[in-house]
Amino acid sequence: MRIAPPVVLDASQQETLKQWARSRSLPARQVERAKVVLLAAAGRTDLEIAASLRITNQKAARWRKRFLSLGLNGLTKDAPRPGRKPAISARLKAEVVRKTTQSKPSNATHWSTRAKIELQSHVLSLDFPLTCFDAGEPSTNSSDPRSRPPVVDQR
Image (tube, rainbow, N blue to C red; front, side, top):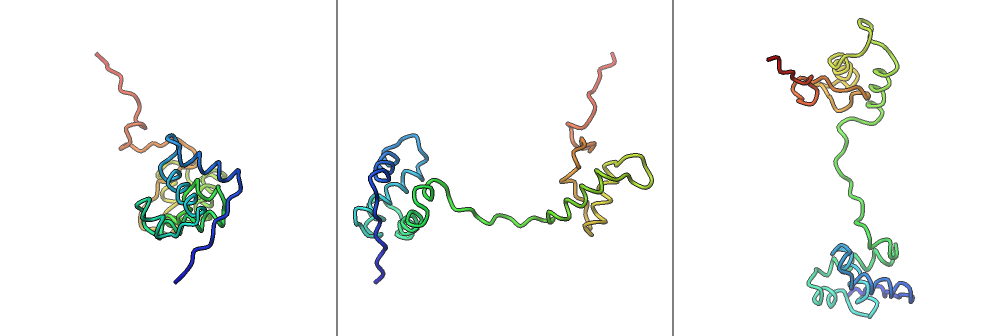
């Protein structure tokens, strides 16, 4: 049987965790985490902590380990998650932005929205246009109601 590592608190940590556990204004997650660490410091096992707080023993073990490795700061935020992989690399985005902001198209005086989309499709070798970056110029997409000129009533 595995034995959880003991949690030893100094006076300031104990006081801070007690304040967090009593708090009604902190996020409920942080209050629960403080209670887990206080019970762990009192010598309770993960199973006992889980039963008294109505959480899983894995959750109790997770917060015990997080506190031991990161201290109080480890209890305030969730661990970062990987998230979605970007569809386009930052290097390719930077290349398109650089080309559209620091050069002129060969057949015009400035970059139009369609010319930028065409460039994006060529640089990125995509079958579909991307309009996720426009190099800081206002959008002229006709389907976007914010990009249309105001309607003037001519009565």
